[in-house]
Amino acid sequence: MNKVYNFSAGPAILPREAMEAGSRACLDFNGMGLSLLEISHRSKEFEAVMNDARAIVKELFSIPSGYQVLFLQGGASLQFAMVPMNLLDEGETAAYLDTGMWANKAIKDAKLYGNVKVVASSKEQNYTFIPKQYEIPADAKYFHVTSNNTIFGTQLQEFPASPVPLVADMSSDIFSRPVDVSKFGLIYAGAQKNMGVAGTTLVIIREDWIGKGKRKLPAMLDYKSHAEGDSMYNTPPVFAVYLALETLKWVKAQGGVGKMKERNEEKARRLYAEIDNNPLFKGTCVPEDRSRMNITFVMQKPELEGAFLKEAEAAGLSGLKGHRSVGGFRASVYNAMGLDGIDALVGLMKDFAKRNG
Image 1 (cartoon, rainbow, N blue to C red):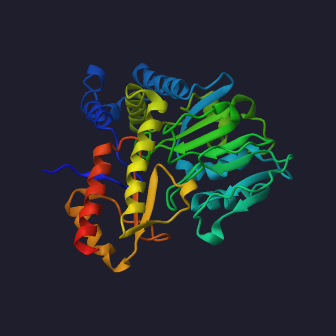
Image 2: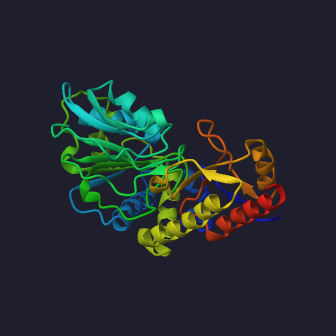
């Protein structure tokens, strides 16, 4: 069988080493004669998994003291609500930057719990760029940004200077580059794009932000419950946490997030070069804001898009169909995508143009 390259936006490509470790753990975890899926989450064996997962997150991001690392559930979408529920008291204001559908959803949820100042938005231009000229209110409790936009293919190349702590949804580019965690009050990310399988959500939060809100919350929606319970207030998603650990061990073995950044920049360079130089294709975003994770492009002749997708699937290039909001194509090139996958896609684009130009 020919190799299949998974360009899906998420759930997404995983390192083979992580998948093989997960397969073994499902049958016999650490020689116990039991599957990882059936051992107690209170066992010393799984407690070691959780401890190791927290430790490698701290190591890869060089997280300073004063932060907690939590593995929660509900995806980034639940964090859209948990962030303001926990951090924004009645009458207080939070600032948000609207750069895509997920940022917009976070804004809608935040408005249920406090005042929201949208400092800038690129919605009227179909989110084809990241706004740069805006003012962050100095009295805001936090400034929320979405670091990468899976649908529209834009990315914050640098995080903005802010007079208030940053909160970031990094679901689709977490661990793809170094991050100075000290600039953030809270970082959250669903696992299913760059750090494992769907089912767990990473939250990195300042310790002095935990349990300081005045709002009464159900325990499951309170960061304090999860911090005090070491991410095991309730039964955690054991397999998802284990796959996150194995995926991050792979990142470390590859050279860490610095090396991931180098690889991701080279992958993006090769594919964007073909998009810009091939007469049949064109990008959808302003060049300075292009994502290194989700590369969106369309055809100069839209009537050929169906034929290209059909050939791509036949060639083992899976998941390239663009989101309905953008159309065309989306190549998600997360950490686990190798240069060979990029070269295979570029090769097909060149060949298709020769035959259909």
